[in-house]
Image (cartoon, rainbow over all chains, first blue to last red; front, side, top):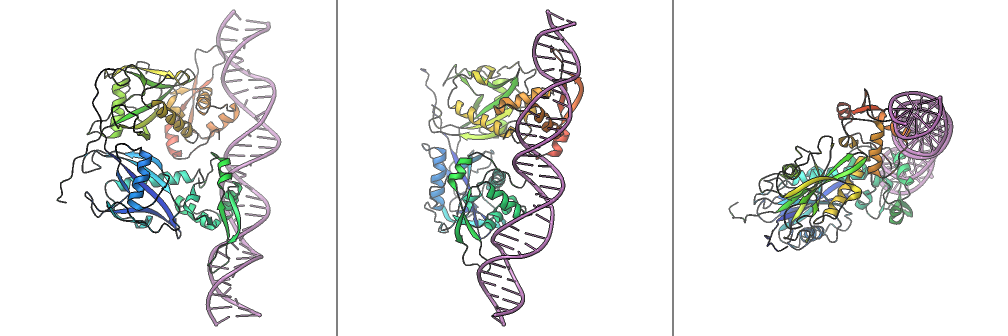
Length: 231
Length: 231
DNA sequence: ATTACTTAGTGTAAAATATACACACTATCT
DNA sequence: AGATAGTGTGTATATTTTACACTAAGTAAT
């Protein structure tokens, strides 16, 4: 080539929209910022990406450093880059989402002190967020509502063993719509991706429901067989 | 706030995956680069975004400058940011796609001389591309195959007046799958988003087919009613 | 032990949608 | 007049979706 080309340098960030489900409520993971700008504001876990790391890797690292959650696989869903979204200049941000199970993960602990805390917040109690994070959150929520209606990803949010009623509630919360119990069960069992266990729910003050497990092997077989809910 | 914060500066680019359909073939818009790196290589139309313009706007501008195509509405679909995707440093790129009608638009003319030409290339004849543009193209193609199977966006690619057979061919090319003529017609006509015209195809050496038009008003009514093809 | 309470668990009929499949018609060309 | 090439059409079957209500099982309180 011969010509000497200028060196480019990029500053951009990652933001993570992480969904969890607990006690019948859909939650999202937020941090309280410990640095300017927006110090003490609630925000999505997010930070500037290093020069020499891949975006996917950065997403995982940043989520870990800000919340203590490790090895969470996330999908990229949109890049936000309004000129004034960041007070310090043009910083575009690549947004990722994930749906995770929050059984023992109540022990959120920021590693970096860029965040003073990390907590699960119920969607209905969402506070004002830093930057354009409300917009990012909305788009992330749209994304999962859409995705859940054609792919069986809801299991990610549930504990390993769950009842059909719990699963149905989850669908109802995400789709914001009541579903018929019999039809729901018929449909979900038909996919054959659930394994019925010999176990029952415990500690409830009424008839205990059977527990089920998501059968990854069978699911992998169906692979891209897309399913539909609530259209 | 009080604290003085550093100023950030961002360098990132846009790349456009633009689909067209002509003479029964699916095509994509490429430019020949006129600058290093990858001078004289084929590439997706793409360039660095200005500091003070929105990403969406940049996409439109860049497409115009490199190909002469004006006012094309595109959707963002993914951001690519492998550490070494660009030889001049870390440059992430936000990818957009669009499906457009290429009736009179054969007159592609780069405005900027960053491109020496812009041409429509049949998918089967895809040359090697600069940067990671093959990867970007693939993901863009995945995107439209997926999208076309649940939203009636194929009309964007056809001339204003088209025959049902042309429409079917288009679906077949994108889905890479034969469809049944009778079932296809039944289904597509059922959505009620096509207007039958009093006109017939001209210049064919066999029985001429009826022409149809996409009815935007009716389509807007159905709005998010998603449709399905070829599952 | 009885009762009250709460959720689990189940089937069927009707409607809508998807699939498989083949031949006669019409315009043009020679 | 005949050959050619694509248009346009219907039906029967299978599958999927929807609507809808009661009994069974376990727990808690008395």
